[in-house]
Length: 251
Ligand SMILES: NC(=O)c1ccc[n+]([C@@H]2O[C@H](COP(=O)([O-])OP(=O)(O)OC[C@H]3O[C@@H](n4cnc5c(N)ncnc54)[C@H](O)[C@@H]3O)[C@@H](O)[C@H]2O)c1
Image 1: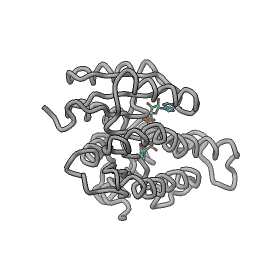
Image 2 (image 1 turned 120 degrees about the vertical axis):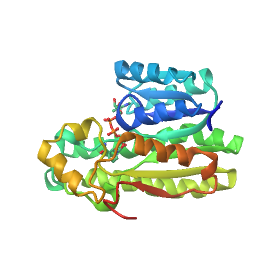
Image 3 (image 1 turned 60 degrees about the vertical axis):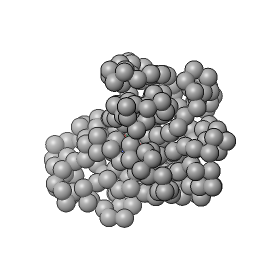
Image 4 (image 1 turned 90 degrees about the vertical axis):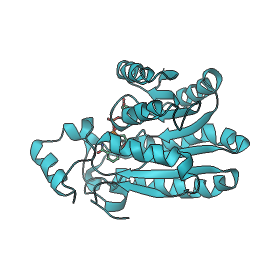
């Protein structure tokens, strides 16, 4: 028996990295997990691992930048799986290989980063807030970034999107508080996922040494924070930003 026994938890971008760690973490604590990702093969592997915890798993291959697909995916979760207790808005990324200074950034790259790192979270939340309000229960946990606080060089679009997640979190928390629904954000520092694993060795070392704890965050560190914020122990915490970054930026 775990904290989330019988509860439906939705994780976006669940196939890899932090999303995968959260999917497995919630399943290990008894949740039935609905997992959304556009990478069907990797999603199937994550779903298989989650089923290893003996929970119900619904894996939906979906491009969440396609609004109609997003809406239909959430409707399917409601139909096939039941009402969600928790939504984890994990989807997001920097411009990665198209990373540049703002003065050189093409408009379509700025729009892509805002769409994937901010707009998708709002549209996912829109699919669940009405039901949470009616049931007078629910949790929304969104993954921001400590780049929103630090303003990392070359990350104007990403910092803007991830700071947007913090504003979204605070305003929605105020709206949902009378219904017992909490809304919180997590700001990870550099975390050991695919994007970090692809940076040159020297850049990885620079990032590691910039962290007072002299280590890169592991996806499980973020999963632990998400599990706490979604748990009954966090019932009186809402509108907050939990920074998980080994002390790289204080908030
Ligand atoms: N890794 C870091 O250093 C770090 C630091 C701070 C914040 N974050 C944030 O944490 C979250 C997860 O990051 P990660 O490093 O685990 O990323 P990741 O790239 O390892 O995983 C992201 C997942 O999203 C999926 N995805 C991408 N585009 C999609 C789309 N259009 N529709 C559906 N699924 C899609 C990918 O297939 C992948 O499984 C993001 O919001 C990211 O901004 C990451």
